[in-house]
Length: 112
Image (cartoon, rainbow, N blue to C red; front, side):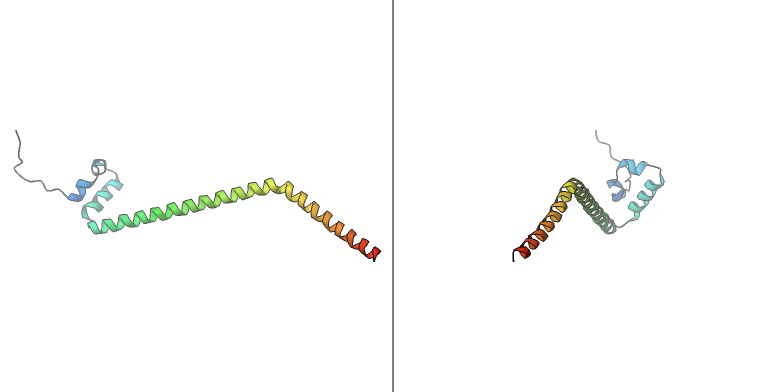
């Protein structure tokens, strides 16, 4: 048995797309969202959602760039810390090389 309604209930198509939790809530944000969606132009909503998606992508990209920069800086600090003894030895060898060059020059002068 199929029951037919005598009078047609008008429904807003935008409100039908909204989740039930959003349409039945009583908080200010939910009331504002219902009001916005009930009276907004679908073209404007599409633009708004595209702008929000673009902003989300930009924030995500900025976050990944910042994270990448932080990781590079931490790796550079760690390498600098690990290479400190090698750099000290290298500095000592460079000083020794300079001294040996001076001694070599003095010996060449004496032989000439």
